[in-house]
Each structure stands twice: as structure tokens, then as C-alpha cells.
Image (cartoon, rainbow, N blue to C red; front, side):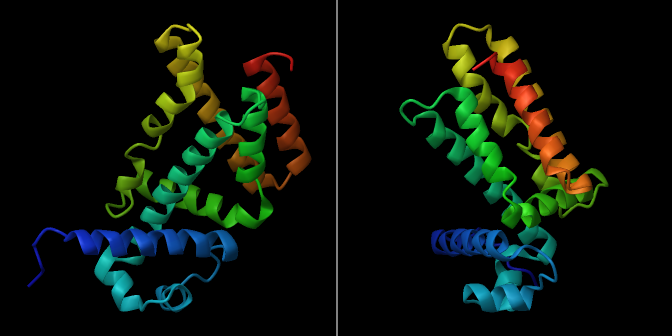
Length: 195
């Protein structure tokens, strides 16, 4: 009989620790040949505990993607408050982080989980929650604060998010780093104006 009791705070804390350790592991080692046994051993737990906290490997991967997306939003927030850093330069630094070759496993995982969710795999569907909306307010805030109509700022934010994700997919599919970086520079010029 399954336990239907709500998670206890200590369980939620341990679950969060495991997700963050798993994200760190995936950032450092990628997802090739990722098994729950190997991941558990690498982050100081067992595959059984990972199943206990996440239910399945797929659900753990969804949580890794969600935590990774949150880290990216946190990084953008930090970059925006750096003294003397223009919005275009903050975007360039985030782009460098997103396209770091050591992290391409993380981006591959993002697109794989999104594909599973779009195919209706129930364990992956939660990754679609917030996939766009969690970014829009953050991306639109500077323009809205500068007096741009909030609806226009959100539309521009959506355009920026779609462009970045499209270029990430292009990079993974083609490996054309120079071409994708040049396209990003052109997008930043169009989006922010000449810098």
C-alpha cells in the first residue's frame, strides 16, 4: 500500500538536497549512461532512496531540468545587478554559460524531457509547467521598468526566450558554434540595439 501522507519538511529538505546534488553531477558529467545506481553512488545515496524521493528516473530527470532552469534564472538575476554590465552584456554572459560545452548534456536533457512531455508522457508533463511563464516576468521586468508597455515587454521576452532555445537546439543539432554565436550576436543587436 502506497504512503499517502503528505511529505514531511525534512523529506522536502532532503529531496531538495538530492536534486541540487544531481544537477551538479549532471553539469560535471553529462547524462550519457546515467543510471540511478551510478548517480546515487556519486551523490552519496542509493538508487532506492532516489526512487523513494522521486518515484522514477524520469521524474528525477524532470526535477533536474526544473532546478537547472531555476539556476539559469538566478544567474540572469545576478548578472543584471552587476555594476556596469549592460543588459546585452548580461545576456552574452548567460549565453556563454548556456553554451559551455561541458554543460551540453544538461541542454540535451532539457530538450529530451520537453519532447517526452509534448508526447504526453505523464511523468514528464510537469516540466511544461512554467517552462515559458517562469521566464517571462524576469525577462520583461527591465523593459517594463523602463516604461515599455507590459504586454509589449512580455511579447519581446517571449521572443527572446524562443530565440535562445532555438539557437541552443541548433547548436546541439549542428555543432556549428561559430554560426550559432554569430546568430546570437545578431539577435542581441536587433533586440538591444547597437552597443
